Structure formats: structure tokens, C-alpha cells
Length: 242
Image (cartoon, rainbow, N blue to C red; front, side, top):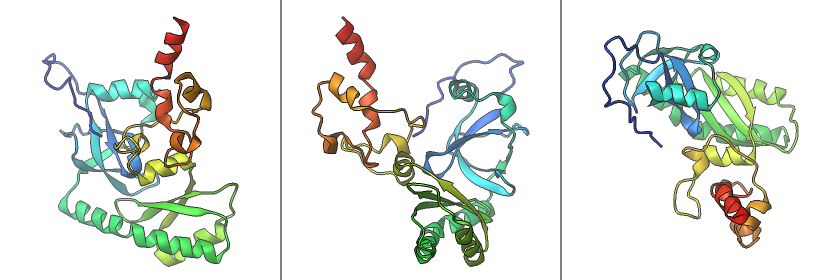
């Protein structure tokens, strides 16, 4: 989901300096902030190369620029001194080709990793794989009921895929957000498009809105109560007070 920059058409002072941070979107609705130290002119939706979390570079789409980034950072309570990674450049043809090649490996890599986990009898489900844009690292997202000793799995995956491996455990809601889908409303899942904060949802939210307490109807694709039950809850609570 893209955001319209309603500030872009406003006149700015002659001595105005652009906000030095941009927001970049990656796979699975992941969004992060990066320093645009070289003041590269960037437009929403452009593919750019940015500094990777542990070296190398990653490829993502510009999702916010300018003063809207300042507002977003304030909303997410992210001080500017915590933004340390940089924008390297606009993605070249070579960058895009390597990125597409890496993304094309994700499905096959996930299934091979699942086979390795089954062979080791690990109680976990590998839900998704996210290759870094330079094809040197992959993050494996998994769900599990408890702690999993995957040291042997990482060793075997490193030997098989010849890349750096990161394992990241996620919850059922995060899994649905990464995989995406269509909700009962007919729209894309909120968690896979714009929702970043997963607040607790209780059956009380349905009760206050006079909804049937049918768990099958109230549950989303993650198996948990739908996040949208909270959207109008405050309005109903205010109405009950009146």
C-alpha cells in the first residue's frame, strides 16, 4: 500500500533542507528507515540498494520520503540517531537482475529447508524465506510452539545453500502477514499491506459490537481473532457511555 505525499506540492522555503531519512519497503510488508546521506533524488516506488543489516546490500522499494518520514518516525517512536544504515544508490540493471535471481530461489529454498528440518525431526514449520538483494544471505521465518535447537539445521542449510543463514521465529499473525491473502471482506489482509502493530484482540471487542461469538467467523487466516474487531471498538464504547 502506497501513501500519497500530500506535502510534495507545497511551496518550501529557499533554505529548506530535505529530511535526510527515507522509508523503504521490503518483502512481507517489512519497512525500515535509511539515511540518504548523498541526498539522492528518490521517488515513491523506486528500487534502491541499501546497506544490509550485517553487511552487503539489500534491494527495496522507496515507500516514503520527505517530511512524511519524520511523521512516521515520530509515530513509531524511532529517534533519528537510531537510523544508522545508509542508502547506497538507485538500483542498477545488474542489481535488479541479481535481486530477481535471488527472489526466484526462495520457493525452492524453502521446500529444501523444510525437508532438512523434517529429516532432523524438528518441531517447527518454515513458513517463508527472504533472500537479501545481493544473494549472500537468507532469513528463514518459522513458527514453533516452543524453543527449537536448530544449530544442526543451520549447519546443514549453510552447506546446502552456500549462504549466510538467519533464523527468525514469528507468531501466527506475523506468518499470515508475510504470506498474504484475501480476507472475508474481499480485500488484501491488513497485516500484509499496512498494519504493523499487532494489538491484542479479545472476544469482548465482538461482544461490545453485538457480533455473534462464532469463533469461525471471528477468526482470520492466522487462526486468531481478526484485528479489524478493534477498528471501531472505541466508537462503540463511546456510544455505550452516552
